[in-house]
Image 1 (cartoon, one colour):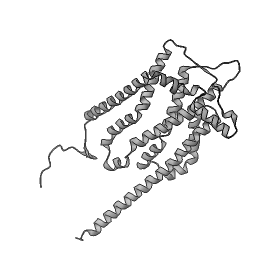
Image 2 (cartoon, rainbow, N blue to C red):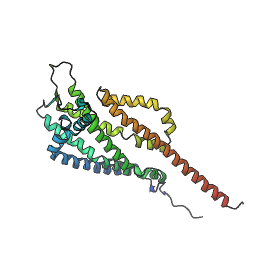
Image 3 (cartoon, rainbow, N blue to C red):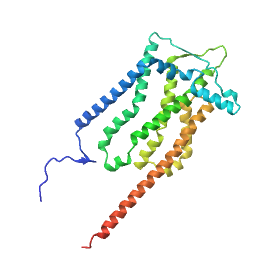
Image 4 (cartoon, one colour):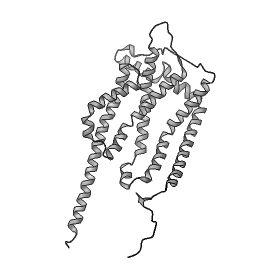
Length: 295
């Protein structure tokens, strides 16, 4: 019998166990690369000032915005001319000496984070992946792609649907005709970014359920059992991220409910896949045991 060599590292997955200092060093480089990507995209956004503000940020403040034009066409189709938004009744103002410069820098940084999000998540995944076992890596294939796609879909929904409806409602709400809405630009930007990013992260629900189902924390049966409770939670979330306008809340609630139903289906598929793998493994073990001769 050959003696084992001392101080052999313990394997985790197919990687050797790293020391705490090695983990910190690896994490440091992941953070540095992620920060560089944010700075690169933020710099590009900073120099694309005309497109960033006139077309992107201030788009929902003008009646020629794509969403308002689509609502107008839909109103003409269903013979509901009130859906047309021909005037957005507010003026955006700057009341601080350095307000526009500050907003330019902060907005560029936010856009840099949004554009770099797929790469940021990829860096996080590269740091986490070596600590996973082979079957966990197998179960998580495509995570970066699907997380990025859901984030982009939620961001587009928030920017083109939720944010314009909120801005239009809040801009048109008055308690007295003598009060003119003169909106501070930071307030406008906060509403736009909050609505867009909130929807972007809410759309990650299917991926969250996928990983929880893989970990055995949730199941399709549990989600079906608590569907009524989930509806209440979804309504609360929609009420938080939208203004007190019933139409906007319904428009935001519907896709979240669809995502919840999709998550139930995902949890069911995960359970079926895990059961099939367990049955296949059990069958192989039984076949191996049957093929061995009795001692």
